Image 1 (cartoon, rainbow, N blue to C red):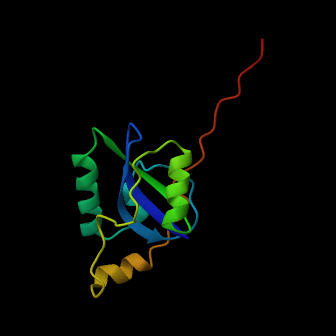
Image 2 (tube, helix red, strand yellow):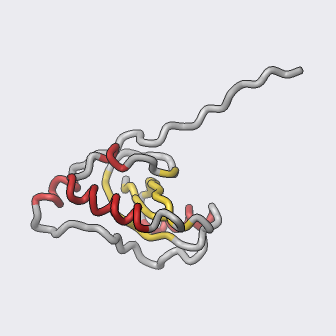
Length: 123
């Protein structure tokens, strides 16, 4: 299962894939804290800077999918337009670096908890 960390436009007119990680299934949702991913510090800082620079129009999301086509179909069903044809992440480590070996082994657990609503008393 691949977990796609991407920036989604607030008006649903596009996405930018930041990085693709291997891990367990996690539901689609906004990512509040990138530190929960357990990425290497330098990569985490680069991604955090990109999120900070684009915070007015874009927000970070994470979603699991078997492949990019499945992710693209899911985004279109949720109303996103202008989804890129191919999955080309903005951040990917060099193949020979130590960082890439660490990233390949990152296992993402449940990051986004399901939201619970209050029970209300009927009158």
